Amino acid sequence: MHETTTENEAALDLVLDYSRKRLTARDLPLDKSVSSADLRRLAPPAVTEDGIGAARALAVFEHVLAPACITTDHPRYLSFIPSAPSKAAAAFDIVVSASALYGGSWLEGAGAVHAENEVLRWLADEFGLPAGSGGVFVQGGTLGNLSALVAAREDARGRGTAPGRWAVVCSAEAHSSIASAARVMDVDVVAVAPGEDGVLRGDAVRAALDEHGERVFAVVATAGSTNFGIVDDLAGIAEVTTERGTWLHVDGAYGLAGRLSTRRREVFAGLEHADSVIVDPHKWLFAPFDACALIYRDPERGRRAHTQHAEYLDTLTETKDWSPSDFAAHLTRRPRGLPTWFSLATYGVRAYREAIDAAIDLAAEIGRVIAGRPELSLVREPQLSVVVFERVGWTKADYDAWSARLLDEQLAFVTPSSHRGRPNARFAIVNPRTTIEDLTAILDTMS
Image (cartoon, rainbow, N blue to C red; front, side):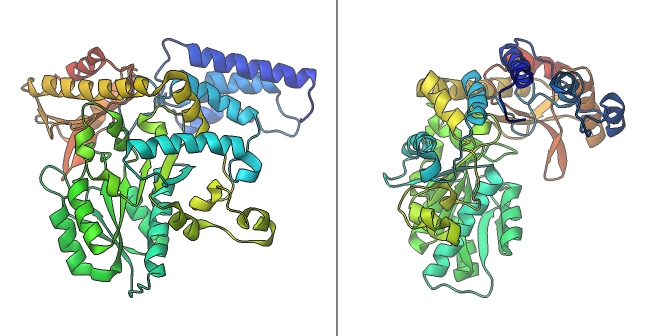
């Protein structure tokens, strides 16, 4: 399996040829999931005692398994938060695997860690964080939020705070990963109602801190909610957390990329006061799955919480080298930030700003189209690149049937959502190849 043989060279050629075809295709199908029974029928067992060979295995993947997966970088994939990796980023992900790189320690991966840190330093500068800030790329926003909150609690413990039960304050519209992290940590979530516009403000946070006191080890502000793309009042919240000495974590998994925009930079005022932030390059920063940038204002606070100690790790932990494994709830890791580094180095930051601007402009444009159609109504004006709207008179069953029909006809992938018990539809726009014609064609199907 590990030797350079004619058979393995042929397998490599097959895989690289398929990858090139996939990355250079101009009109990829949207595709859709199929039932487990159909997959068992169409894809007979491939994992056998003697194997089936690379050619047959790739054929099963190409013709059966891949078409049973929705194409997340399709321009009409508009559900959840899509992925739209640049060509350079997707291609370099192949290089990362081919190079057998380990990204957990400086000792083993100094070059890779240096490149990842260049991206983290750039992001920290864009976010207004001080020169000493830094962090690590982790698997996704859930792990990023969990790791930041673990560091926040450890920091509170280090200051001598020891309540009966810890709590974290966040918006009632915060991402579900905050509640998930709280369950893992066995702490309480104090969910604070935002304003009618979906924005959590400083006065509401102050009231929660007044009520729960030293139990609160962190406040989580959202910079671009998943459901609406709303940015909390970061400046107002930061004023309160600074006054109280409470850790401020900003969950910007989707929306913090908007800070790069020339259109919406002002809505992120106050971000520079955060103690930790996350943003997912596999969302609106055009990297392949999976990558979340976790940045600490003071990385030592992250290191104290997360460095693992064992005799076989002494070689790593007895130095001051920057080892990414020290900054999150992980040890083994691939250098998942390298595709982002390569893409930024290839295209330059300006290309990123322009692509993010284009998504914000497109959201505003389709919002105006929706507002002009009597059968449709906007639930909220789009702030970043998420557009939520209702079809007047439709029930949840209507939205479900419509969504299924769109996918069956391979027109689009738009799953229904809801707000305050009312069903709705939602466009999440991050792909630079999505057009106003794509979106209006989808709206036409609701007439």
